[in-house]
Image 1 (cartoon, rainbow, N blue to C red):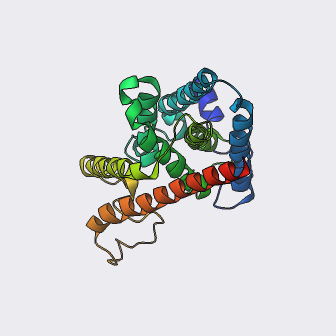
Image 2: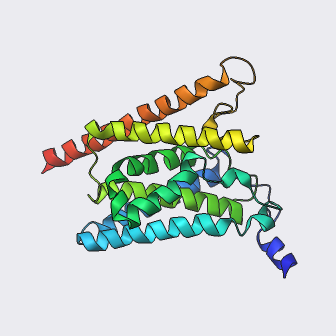
Image 3: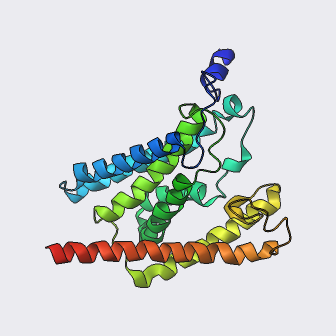
Length: 252
């Protein structure tokens, strides 16, 4: 039985040599599939009542949690042991429990706006440049699970805004800044206690071009640069939302 599972979860089934690299054909196909699913979901749900929309978001949240938690049971077959890098210290992985809390617990609903903004932003960054998707074939478990997880996370964020369940207001961007600071501290804590990891890219730059290793910038500066960069990107997300609202109002 173990040999069967090792075969099912191996990185290459046909030895094609094809992998998901940035802007390769397989990467573009994943981009189209994810974008198409989100657009299709919007048109499918836009005319439903609020209860129907909330149920759809709950289904996405369930899918996100199941994908994340169940993945740990597959690590032995995929990586030969637990992949510590998938612990909830990266911004995308830590968003999984955050999404669950704001979706299923009314006490945390007040934090839904910053979580939604980051749920749009963080997986979008990853999907556009999937640096750690692995060297396996595009249809292997590792690739499918990674892209599925980030796609569902982004869909949850985008559809919450597009369906009007979360209505971001730019003056609330400070909440996103506070959340980013918390995530930065949390990721640094993970890097310190586990070591040899680069959660939230606080040990080396996100593109691994050696800014820290090469002595170009001190490592502590990444704790300042990263939340600032994400804040600027979050401001851009707010800007797009405001622009779309204005266009819709003008059209109406």
